[in-house]
Amino acid sequence: MKLSHVVIAAAVSMSIGINANAADRGKAYVSNQDGGVSVIDLNTLTSTTTIDVKGEGPRGLAVSDDGKLLVVATRENGSVSVIDTATNEVLSQIKVGQNPEFVRIKGNFAFVSYEPSAKGGPPPAPGSAEAAAAAKEDDDDDKEPARIGIIDLKLGKKIREITGGPETEGVEFSKDGKQLVITNEADNTVTVHSMKSGKLLKTIKTHEYGDRPRGVKVSPDGKTYLVTLEYGNKFMVMDKNFKVLRTVDTGATPYGISYDRKAERIFVAANKAKTLEVYDAKTYEKIKDIPTGNRCWHFTFTPDDKEVLLACGKSDAVFVIDAEKLEVKQKIEDKKMPWGVVTYPKSMGSLDTAIK
Image (cartoon, rainbow, N blue to C red; front, side, top):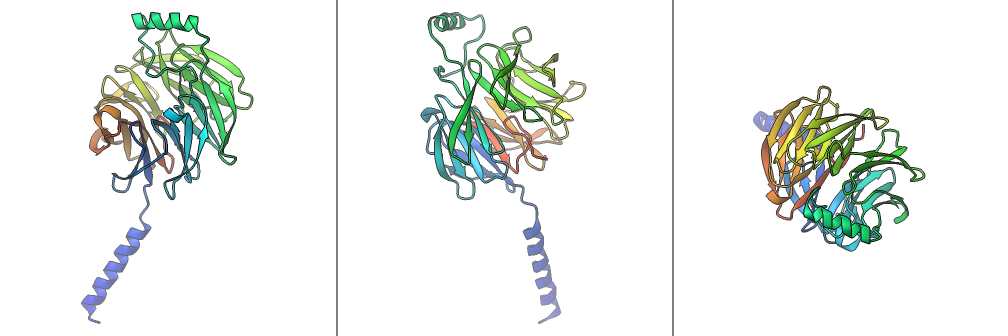
C-alpha cells in the first residue's frame, strides 16, 4: 500500500473513531395537542418522527429517570400513555380521570393532574361578565376539585390520589421530596401537600399579588419557589417555607418558568408578550426579552444547556434559542400545535428538572 493511502486510511479511521465517541446530545419530546408526540434529534436539531400515543389531545409529558419510559397525558380519553422510548411504542394506557393535564415523574411514580369538573378552556378573566356567570354556576353546582393521580409505573396502575384546588395547573416537588406543590388557577391559590399522606399542609392565596397562578418551579438548592401569575403579569417569589418574599413584573400573561441549571438566571415564557424573558436570579433584574411566537407556554434547556427549546403552539414551531447569546437561532416546524417539551437526558425546564 502506498504511503498516501496509509495516511488517508488512518485519517478516515480517526474520523470515524472521533464521531463514534462524540457525545450524543439526546432527544427532545414535544407533545402536540392536535396529534402525537414529535421526537427531535438534538444532534441535528431536526424532528425525526412522530409517536402515535393512541389517544387525542396530548399535553403534559415526562420522561422516567432512566429514560426508558415516556408518560403522556391524553386529554380526550382520560388516560396516560406509557411509551417505550427504545421503540416509540405504547406499552400501556392507564386510566387517570377526566381532563388529565400535567405529568411529573419521581422515582417509579408518575403524578398526573386531572380535573373532574373541567368543561374545557381557560377560566374567564377576573371581573368579566363571564367570570360572574361562572361563579354563579359554581355556586349552583357541586363542583369537584382537581386531583393529582399517583401512578405506580411498575404496577401500571393508579394507586392513590391527592385532592388539589379547582383547575390545577402546575405541579412541583420540594427538594427533599416530602412535599407536593401545586398551583390552582381557578381559585388563585398555591397549595402544599404531604407526598406521603396527601394531606393539605398550607394554602397560599395569590389574589393580592395577581390572579391565575400557573407555572411553578423550585430552585436547584430547594430554597426558593417561583410561581407565575398569568393575570398579574408577574412572578411570585417564595422561600422554602412558602412565605412570599416579593413579586417581579413580567410581560403579558406569563406561564412556563424555570431556573437554569446553575440557578444564575430565571427564564419566563410570557405568552401574550410573545417573549421568553430572562432575569438575574439574585437581583431579579431583567436581562433580556427574547422575541418569540404565538402561544409559547412551555420550554426546556437541552441537556448540555446550550439551547432552550420553546413550544409555540400557534406559531406551528418549536423555537430554538441560543442560551448564551439569548437569541433565536432557528425554528423547528411543528404544525400540530405543540404544547410541552422535555428532554432525555433530563434537563431544566418548565415541565421537568435536571438530575445532577
